[in-house]
Length: 458
Ligand SMILES: [Zn+2]
Image (tube, rainbow, N blue to C red; front, side, top):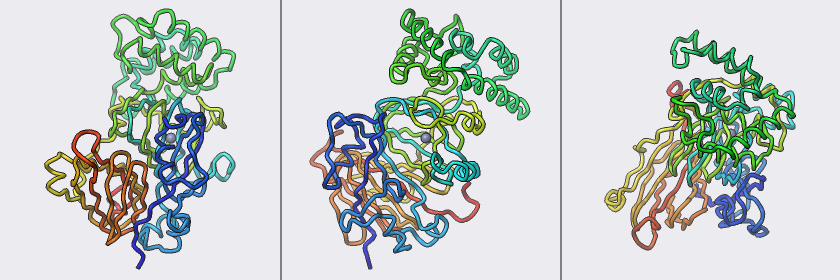
């Protein structure tokens, strides 16, 4: 029988927002197992490393050069029969590394039903009929926008940022303020519904601004940021915003406008939570959650799909109508969007792993398609043995050196190496670095899918 451990060769995309040359983790990882014709060009942006079976950029088995898609379709047991049947013989998730130099488009991903409608209507811009919940875990410090800010923050900015108020118009701003005033934190379903409706109306007004008005507003906003950074977007004795520091807000506004001059995204910023993630911190985006990434290197896992509805910070196709209609308009502090990792109970650490405070952490979003495990093995000889799971896994190493063993096959692992592990295989990873200390941590991320008995999730 074939041993279900395959080292993968994965492709990297070259979108404009990617980090350039060797700065890009996605490019460096790709280069460790590159196709013969791949070299990192010093002035080229490298955005996304794709690990999976998606036909737009399919991963290949290094040894045979067959695509992973071909291999899992040939041998259902690699996915497990359950997973293969449920997800049509494909890997249910797409695993990525993103290296972000400048803001990505403001976007949301359609739910299953909307994805089917969009794909039927416009297959060029919506290449899949699948939904695309996604999870992001920072590898280096990350900045992004995610979900709508608490209403009190939005109201604050409507009053403290004159160009924003002018852009949406005083009437729309006042109507919004009247509806939400005193109801910002209400938990009454009827009140929340009204608040969301008010937010939808105001946000739609913003998104429908003419390009002349946007240009004027951007100019005025940036001159405010230039002239008085220490009081930018503040009012005396008012609510805490995120970020709280006016100079940081001003610098961020200038950076975004520098990347995308005169773009509506600069004002969308005042509606969305600004989030920073430290390495290892993650967030989960449900279908229809609005978000935009600003900077950093991240691991991303999503349902296998490429559907994005965009509305700002992008030279690509924008679909403002669809975006403003599809959003959930949930508003909440950013802490609620972060995903809390928990100790993964189905991995056994050896004594060296224990004594070096090594860890195996699970990020488990409330969907069937994927979960992610981060393993930090902190010293040479530290080892983690994973119980077999009834589904496929993909591993990537983001730091250090080690080895991976499945059945009686052992492979060397270095930063950037990617492996596919078939269903029901016991898998052991071990740090083989040269000494102690931060430089010697062996870090891997593993995305996997295991279907729980019906009804447990979702
Ligand atoms: Zn996204």
